[in-house]
Length: 124
Length: 106
Image 1 (cartoon, rainbow over the protein chains, first blue to last red):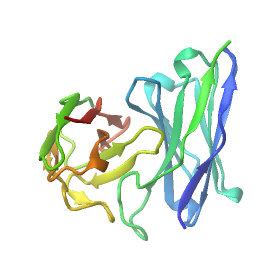
Image 2 (cartoon, helix red, strand yellow):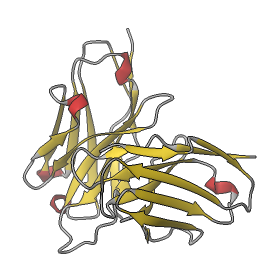
Image 3 (cartoon, rainbow over the protein chains, first blue to last red):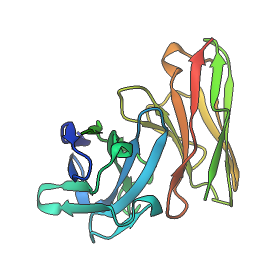
Image 4 (spheres, one colour):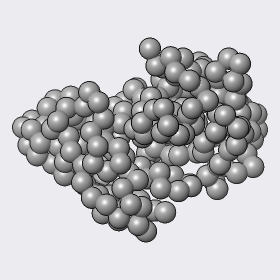
């Protein structure tokens, strides 16, 4: 069964870094991008960026450039999001979602599979 | 590209038909999806490519539009449809979500 399973809740102090994982199963990992989306309390969904799981190439939203790093380990079908220099505004639920990269084998269907979300709390 | 979604909130009754709109700041062809988000759950794609219904999504959901103006319609609202809805463009980077529409029970 196709699924994305994310790591557990993290509590961090301001200035620290956090690394969230997203493990894929049930499909060919490198045929898709992983997108990262977050939702802060009382706010809407916010697209953070994406990683090409085949090449490792990334694109980040301007707001996160320089403070966010997206990586992957193809051997264990896992993508990672690392956010550094955390502040209270980074308190949010972070989601990974897949989007097909090429429609040669699978059709495009938007962000069709999502992880369950990882809560990151930044508090002193 | 900015996505302007309206209304920000909407109150309706079971059985009603509702429409949510999204306007893009420039043309995005049909590179737009609609997502439903409930508290404590992951978002769920309802519509992709502006008009295509995701497998398993009830046919009371429909999408229309192209270029800069898009709509999501829900006919015959069911209790499980009360949630927050977002549009998302994936025309080019950076992708952006609309601000969201919270659909509440009247």
